[in-house]
Length: 258
Image 1 (cartoon, rainbow, N blue to C red):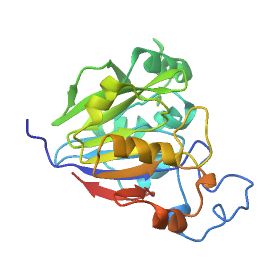
Image 2: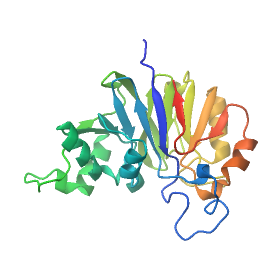
Image 3: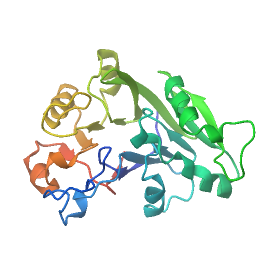
Image 4: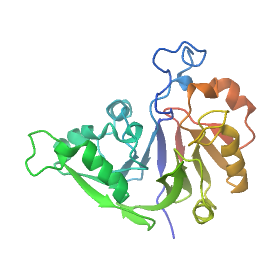
């Protein structure tokens, strides 16, 4: 099957606290390198006709303004933690300019949490100006948004089931610490993979940098970028220089084409 050419923009590459972290004066949080400044993790996926965001965290408004995203067709959700859903209210602007509800996609559990967190958007009587949202339940079956075919990839965030997504030759998984064999098969063959790599030390619900490198090697992915990075990862320039070939730290504003 042929896929449309896609542009992927990293809207944010930081963990839940972002980088710099409030109140921290470590060398990463005080770095003058723009690549050490990280909003909460999200990506923008664009074909010639379709625009999708994966996760709308607390920095969603800032990210949309920063990248001048005037049209948005859908938001996909990996899971329901606040650093991935908190900015959803700001789809109101797209409701106004596009004169249509915003389509959001997630598992039944994720959408249920969103309905609870943003209950005012789903009540029978809606206060003027609240976001207009249409929910689309997804599971493991592929689906289309515009001309972009999307394959969900189930994974685990400790005991929480989450989704990654494959778009043609590009696969994206954040907030993951375990991927079972059937999902690994869905990732294999990708030309570009994005994996979370929180820090160097072991973590209960995220891959470490070495664990993410090992998985990329196991799956034989030519190019892998690491995201959802904390300030504990270290300075971008130092860590990037130490990574093996084809393995890179992502950074906010990074653009790749697949």
